[in-house]
Length: 419
Image (cartoon, rainbow, N blue to C red; front, side, top):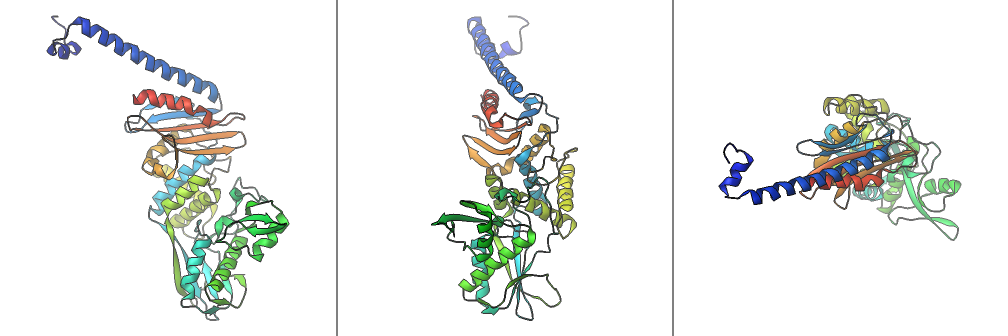
């Protein structure tokens, strides 16, 4: 076939004739057309469900090719998928190996001062271990003095409902315990702890009885000082358990560097990656904003406050992610003032991919969901049949529609590309 080169050149070397070439080419065209049609159908269905107040994007990681997009630059309310942004900022500002510390100081009058630095995961087991270590060399103390001054007071998080008993509305503070919640059950008309490792102390019980929940995890803390006092009561109880008598009460105070003597530092077992894993798994708003606040204190100095935290995360988004125009009001996604585009989220997901295992995983998908009234979002990664990762985001800001209903269409787009 004179003059025929390129594609036919390799065929000629194999001594194939037209009867082989023609069916081969036709089959390739046929299956290619079928794949294109399947992708096109999935895309059309996606666009139909998204409507004017929805956006979505799918990106093949590695080469960055966008396989699907709709309203990709529209700024929408992200709800809890915003925690991915906060996670990235915390990993960058604090570092993967960062661990929270709680410090203990002995005062000349025998009081024990506990100073918190925003550990969101300080729970009864940690307090038990810290108390056991302290009781080795402290056989008695006066008051337990709780120092909450590393955070400004109050810290008002936009979108957090005051008066709520829901755990996701827990207030932030520098010294907190058990996420500012208690888990209870009712037995014969009386409240008991639902967690054997956590005593139901009078400080908590009085408040629980006033609130009157049937059972479950209850947020009973009014503000950051309340949270610090509850932590102090737990320290008092656990010190007594380990043989260190507490002869005074639990009171608020601040560290006096000139006279208070550091006697022990409790370093959390959790690295910041562990904190993020727990936060993403349970979509913990309290933890997300603890991270944002601590990032602010790290960059701009204590006391931590919302303005510094927002400024620190914005700085990361603009300087490291090179994203402009994102609206950031707080770190959890509670605020409807947070606004993000699908393109911004895809860029963040591209950077977060090495940390994807910190997210929930099911059916070959790493994911984070978000829900507010009239808002449904989902973002994460599909793993293709070829082993390649695909980042995706769906944000719907209209009532009656669910982001997770679009997963089959998103999967089909990925499946066709990965074949």
